[in-house]
Amino acid sequence: MDEKEAMIALRWAERCGIQDASPLYSSLLRQCCSSRSLRLGKLIHSSLQRAGLESDTFLANLLLHMYTECGRIRDACSVFDAIARKNVFSGNLMIAGYARAGHLREARMVFEEMPQKSTVSWNSLIGAFSRSGRPIESLVLFWTMNLEGVRPNSVTFMAAIEACTSMEEISHGRFVHAVVLSCEGEASVGVMNALINMYGKHSRVSEARKTFASICKSHRDVISWNSMISAYARNGRLQEAKNTFDAMDLDRNTVTWNTMIGGYAQSESAGAGALIMLAMMDQQGIHPNACTFISVFDACARISALRQGRLVHSFLLEAPGAEDHSQHHLEVGNSIIHMYGSCGCSAEAEKTLHRMQSRTVVSWSSLVAAHVQAGDLSSAVTSFHKMAMDGVLPNEVTFLALLSALGHSGDVKRGWSFFISMHHDYGLVWGIDHLVCTVDLFGRAGLIEQAERIVLSSSFARLPVPWMALLSACKSSRNPGTIEKSGTVARTALELNTAKSSPYVLVSNAFLDDLPYFPGARTLPYQPPPPAAPLVKTHLG
Image 1 (cartoon, rainbow, N blue to C red):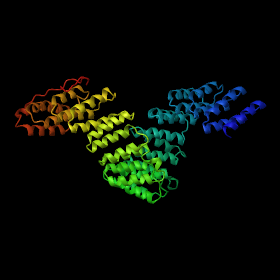
Image 2: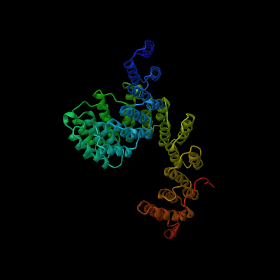
Image 3: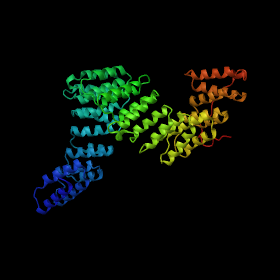
Image 4: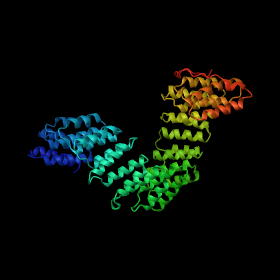
């Protein structure tokens, strides 16, 4: 029944004084849960209060479920607190509601206060911590559950494996795998698929293959095959991924094709394979989705395949459901801009951006980088200002593209202005790459003293990278004063980076080239840099 009919039924039940209206309230509350109709749910709540049924545990649990489904955690909490005889279902619903809202501390408190806990109680909390990026807490709960003798099920294992997948160490995952094998009847195909995915993401391809092989052939589903193909492709074993793809005895879905296309797209030497797979996918009548096109455009960008990129772009606009994943789709549009930019076609990249219905900092930063790639500094700066007019704030990537371009242009004044503006106007933190670009900019202009002051004033003064950049700047200068400075810079670079050969190569090249100008280069005393100071008052003079 619709909302109007439900309200009529409620009024009729109240006016007629039905003795046991619980079935009616139960049916209406279940309907509210499925439709997430908060307005009707509140009317039912008021009716329950008038009928004196609010304390009924069964109906209160349904009311609690309705509020959590509608995202009204405060209302759910009020209902939960009012339940005189809470049962395990009450606690499970409240834990799930808090977990969905991200209130893990409150969910844990409800869990700890429950006199009885079911497997569902444990699963709710283990899954909540796992999904929230807190795998340690999730696994501690998993092991505690085992110690308390509560038998895990497939849902438990899936949550624990998800937690292990996000961790750097694989040892926890192997322990969970061992528990899975020890629980007869619990090693469902879903759990085994999760294990294959976990091993693949940790680059343990042989263990992923063994897990895949352990699944009975008749029980393998398309997710099993996709997980194994992904494990190979993710680790650069494209031929084995293709062999598994070809051996697949089930109908391939879009995810299967996307996995292969994505694997080829990430390869430095096999990017063309992504285009071949897209053609095969089209021939077999499988409709590509946004993920497909993102991978293909990334492949075109990687191998600078402009002609193929344009063809795919045209194909995209003519594909079924093009409006769902054309340049109006944010991520696809961004990948098209990146593709055109990598191929040196900044004009087409800009056209794509302006056709997009929504644009983010990634969109604009990709366009700025596209202009930089094409050597069009003026358009890059113009796009930066248009970005601000569009209400989008730049990020560190945007400034890095600009500083890199300005470093090659020699426009010291504008480059320094952007460098200072990055922190003081936009509150962004300078990274070492921004510093190196700025040092390179000053060095190319022959302003070695100013470049050294920038390095000394930064928080990276004790790292070798900016000193290497400064040494390169010294090498490009040909006056005796700068050559003398290069001795001090070289000693600093060597002192801070004795483990690598690159400083020695730069020092050797610099001094060998400049010996006619400065014969005493080999005997310059080492002068360590002073402690780092805040970069606030460095100026050009």
